Every structure is written in C-alpha cells, then in structure tokens.
Image 1: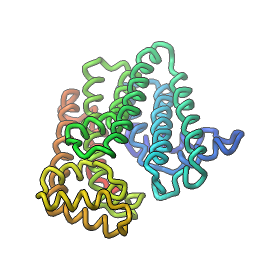
Image 2: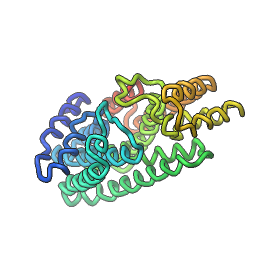
Image 3: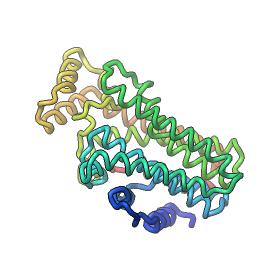
Image 4: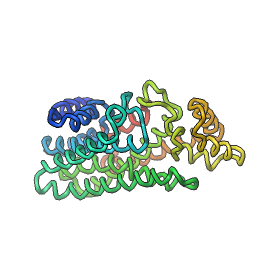
Amino acid sequence: MKTLKEIQEYITHTIQQLNWNKAPRGLYEPIEYTLEGGGKRVRPALLLLTANIYDANLEEATAAAMAVEIFHNFTLLHDDVMDKSDTRRGRKTVHIKWNENTAILSGDQMMIEAYSQIAKLSADKLKKVLPLFNKMATEICEGQQYDVDFETQDDVTIPEYTEMIRLKTAVLLATALKIGALLGNADETEAQALYDFGINIGLAFQIKDDYLDVYGDEKTFGKPIGGDILCGKKTYMWLSAWKNVTEEERRELMSWLHNQEAIPNEKIQAVRNIYTKVGASKECEVAMEEYHQKAVAELDKIDTNGDKTQELRNLAEKLMGRNK
C-alpha cells in the first residue's frame, strides 16, 4: 500500500468497516451518514502516506488515521450548525436532515470516538501523539472562534485571517502528517518539516476553497457557490478586495455585505464582479502558489529527488489543481 490511490481505497474500506449500527439510532445514524458522505479523505491519506514512508505499524497508523478523519468530520457537523449551512458534499447537512440538537450530540460522540481510536496506540506512541492531538484540537477551536469573531469585525487583516485559517484548517493537515512520522519513529527534524509542509499546503488549500466559493462550479464543488458572500464571511478573497477597492467600491461592498434582503444570485454576481475588477482573484492565485512552493521546500529538506516524498508531492499538486 504505497500509492495515494491505494491508500484512499484502503481508507474508504476501513471507514466502511466501522460499526455504527448501535442504539440509539438517533445518535449513531447521523454519524454513519456523515462518514459515508465521501469527501477527499485528505487528512487520513496524509497520515498514512507519512506512516508508509517511515514503515510505521499499519494497525496503529490506521487507528490514528481514523481518529483524524472522525475528528475532522465532527468539526464539520458543528461548523455547519454555526454557519447555518444547508448542504455539505452535495447532500443535506445533519442539522437540516435531522435537527441542530442531533448535529451537536452526534458531533460530540464523534469527538469521543476519535479519542477512542487514538487510545488504541501503544503506550510509547501514545505518549508522543496524544499531546500533539490535544494541541491540534485546541487550536481548531481557537480558529473557529476567530472565524466567528471576524463576522462582526470590519477591520480584519490578511495576516489575521491567515492565522485563523492556520488554526482552523492547516493544523489538522500538519498534525496528520507529523503523527504518521512519529508512529514510524522519524527524527524530529523530518517530522517538523512534514508538519510545516502541512501548514503551508493547508493554507494554500483553504485559500483555494475561498477562491472556489466564488469562481467554482457548483456541480463539482459540492455546495452552493457564493455561500461565503451570502454569509458575509471575511475570506481571503474578500480581504484582498477590501484593501484594493476605491472608496465607492468599498461602500458598495459594505452595502452588499449588510444587505440580507438582496436576491442571492444578484448579490453573489455583484460581489464577484468587484473581486474580479480589483484583482482579488489574481491575488488569491498568487498566494496559493506561494504557499504551495513553501510546502514543497519543506519536502526538499527530507529528500530533493522526491524518492521518499513523491506521493506527498503528487497530493499537493492534486490539491492545487482541484475544482472541488
């Protein structure tokens, strides 16, 4: 099991083997629904790719990969409640299909299950991995709080936003990579390089997500285009535009931001036109490529010819070229 495709097939098979056929069904059925919803499985794939590089024990690496994937999906359940999102991966979100209480409680149970998977590690590995996993969990909560705070702030800067997405998105990718390395007893220098690779590719990944929310294809993106615009979220795209607009365009942006009665498609199109006019889309593309290059530079610290890290490089390229 060495290629990305083989690893992704293994992850899908392993997730299907998890037993959620338990009572009460109102708690476990939404978990099963969430995990069978697909997704890119990027985080467990990163963990297993690095575990494979360092010949880690497959059983332990699998448990850690499941922990990462279940924890990630737990955060999505709660995020969708907080963001009032109707769809996820082309399907109804749990709080829409069931209700908010169910989404919260099933999400809580998923967090518990994630820690149950981590607890399967041997004592020496658990000692290394658990503090890292706990740090990740805390930082994701911090990132989510910043995201909530930014909704009512008009003076958010790009560095502040970048720190928010580092916490909310990138640390989970980085942690998955480092856990895989630690399970294979990689030295600290290489484990840290993989972590830093994850941070940079995670930042590029989220900026790409911001870009696709405006310019993506709804059929392939898996959720309605323009959702961030309608919610008034301060994305990289918004902040890039904000610092480049004229005073007249700034007033227009603010007017659209606070106009909750606007026809959705008109609002999305109007804001998109401003983004394009002031070069926000180009700025996003430049930022994505900068973080991508920083990520590759971290892998070069491990091997410059790509023998060990080729599959990670391939995945990074795939993430940069994605349309969903």
